[in-house]
Length: 110
Image (cartoon, rainbow, N blue to C red; front, side, top):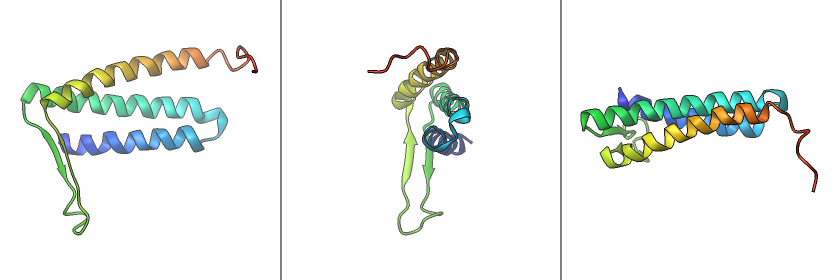
């Protein structure tokens, strides 16, 4: 379960980055913010589960890619940083929604 959430966190984070770069301007802020909050939420769930259980979250992709597989592992020490980063990321994204709600008219051209 935590392995799937670990992969989901990475994929949603990648989707957020792509949405921020390629989405139409009127949807860019909302879509990238929602996806980033989702990725932080998944990361928070995985991190808390690892801290609570003490068992690392591991994903091995050698079954999917036999010749070029890789492994991801999140131990308790890494989970502490993931939880802190996820909480800060969620707070920053909520602030971003309010900040960008004022529009770009308040910015001055240099």
